[in-house]
Length: 99
Image: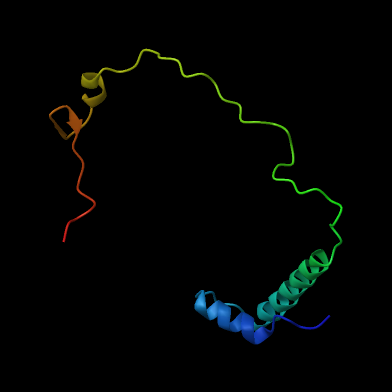
């Protein structure tokens, strides 16, 4: 199999990603990535002409329940343990600033 991913490419990518790799790791990953790309080439060459396209592999749908109104906290109870409130709302630090 032709070496598609070289040790030099792995070295460059690891520097860009700020990942420290040993020379042995670079050699190992170059071989592993080349194998993966070779496998993808094999898949690309498969004859799938008579295979129907699918968007889902099963007929299962989402399992949803109906919304039901249930008792909840009042606004006063919800705000009871908050350190900072204003006019019935939680008061939180500003995270977006206008220029």
